Image 1 (tube, rainbow, N blue to C red):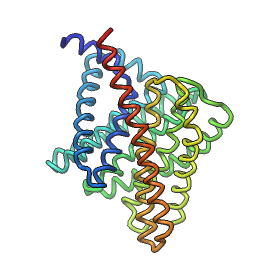
Image 2: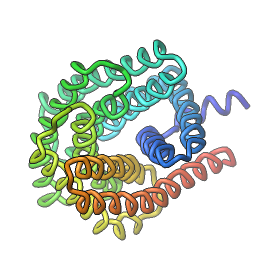
Image 3: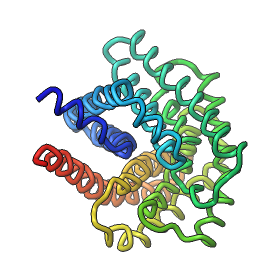
Image 4: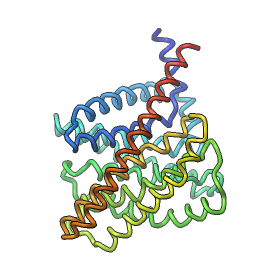
Length: 314
């Protein structure tokens, strides 16, 4: 039994990592609505996946190295460090020292991952076929540290991350829009298109979290990007669900979840600025996002669970 389980770890898809980032983010959304048990249950599931994936990394390192040598799977491996930062913020509530250490380890590992990914896939040459929105998981995923890191009391480090994230988003997004317009993405990377919602959302949430007097023009611009990406996803949704389920569906999870947080933060900012009508519109948009995201993440988690059960029946 143990041997079988260990062997199965080799086939644990890397896409489960960003999926659990999405689930954890949605769990926090529900916790903020008063449903704290959902967050605790989700974080427990995150911990289980992290333990399992750590087993894969150390027990099947040849497979991991092979995956990491391919651009798209490598970009998704950032989900591991993102989950590390999320776990750190959760642990912080119980033990500040351990929680902050785990959060910081995740931050450092993600920074190293960015450097390695950049050397392999940018400095050595960009391949248009693998230049897909999953790159944002690597380049902007580090901003999870600033989404959950308010309690860490590291304003200098976090502000660096915030401005880095905004700059790298502004740098990459024009090229990504051109790539998506001129070179349509096909299966199995089709669902990565939904990831375009993540970077603008991460930038907006992080900017509001750490900049005490935010520039409203920048905030409006970022939220406009969020809304454009959300409309793009809604437009693409029939196409996304025209495929039989595969791990690529993970691309729909975290972007939709962090998009909720972006709308919630923008609603709060607008209301605080005295724009109650606009703030209410953003709040209502967040409600629609919660509705959609709950359905999408539930669907993806259910099908990943089915894949796991079926793998044991073979």
